[in-house]
Image (cartoon, rainbow, N blue to C red; front, side, top):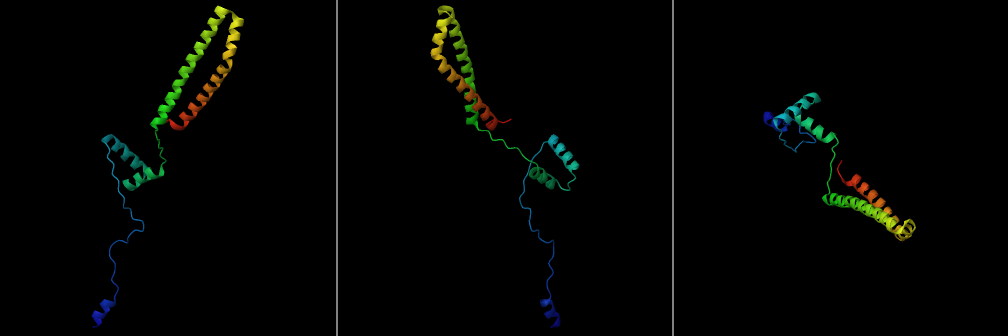
Length: 146
């Protein structure tokens, strides 16, 4: 009786390793070619980590990553806006040619009087061109990868 009673009352000893509080359950696999593998092993040896998985986790989680999101429609829009500059240059060239022809055919004073009619439109055109340039510059800085 004493032997049976003592064994029932005796606590059973737990065997094995104590369970970890934050168990690492997620697993990821990468495949490397021989050249990249040699580079990886070289970096691993220099790092001083004891396990490759810790080294990889440290590289991925502790080094800042730069994520670039490419918006195709925004790139197309910027390209279209940029094409306006060629049209602006063409209009400027035509404007200068018309002014030269007017001077040659009508004289400088009459040409200046005729050009005063289109002067407000020309100023507005120049302001629009500057606005477009600023807008395109902002879009390029915000949306296009560097």
